[in-house]
Length: 266
Image 1 (cartoon, one colour):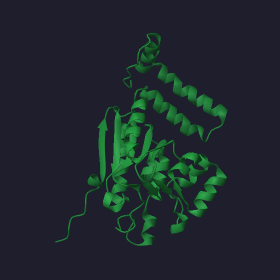
Image 2 (cartoon, one colour):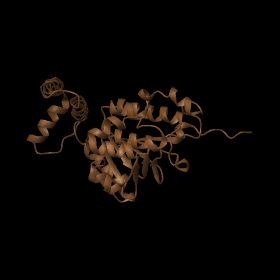
Image 3 (tube, rainbow, N blue to C red):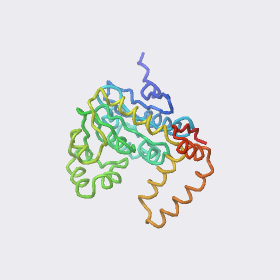
Image 4 (tube, rainbow, N blue to C red):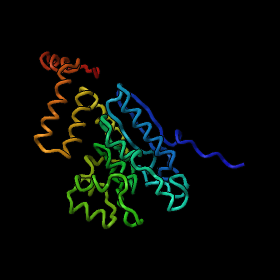
């Protein structure tokens, strides 16, 4: 009798505590490569966290030595078992694309190395914290493909055209400190401190007014494709409803009373 395939729910863990949702890729024996069902599971968890009013920050991480070594090319679970079957993969509904449109801040806790699709997922997060022994492998062109899930959009904006071109065209692998110097990650820490650093940063974000943080993220996203004058106008339109929130009143009151605020997301 054939052994039952593992469920995507087992491969993608989800927890919520202290206003922080943590999504963990839990496929350590396969270097946390992503199967077809896992693409759906990660996407669903991201959307679930974004809808949850109790969640103020999302952490994406992996279990074991790898963050994510890319798509699972061996299982035949992504668009079919043949190379031609990958044309059926709808990238518009996969984690990097969905992540770009989330209002909730996202942190990638790079517990280990990321390659290909895993690198695109990491780059899709707002902030990255990387283990000092981890690497980012932009190995797309070395495999006959291109950064298919946001890399060609994100890398020129993160690095500038020339450095992005060099990285993508060569398919080079970068060590953690190189990633930090280039600006691909915000922090490089010892491997055993990645989770605690990510949790501490998420907790710091979660202390602020969630509606204001989400509005700021929306405006940052829009501002990447707007003129300055258009952007200022849109910021003003986002500001007006914030003035009517309980959190705005609490923020002003706590400042005047010299005490920590207690925001409710209302």
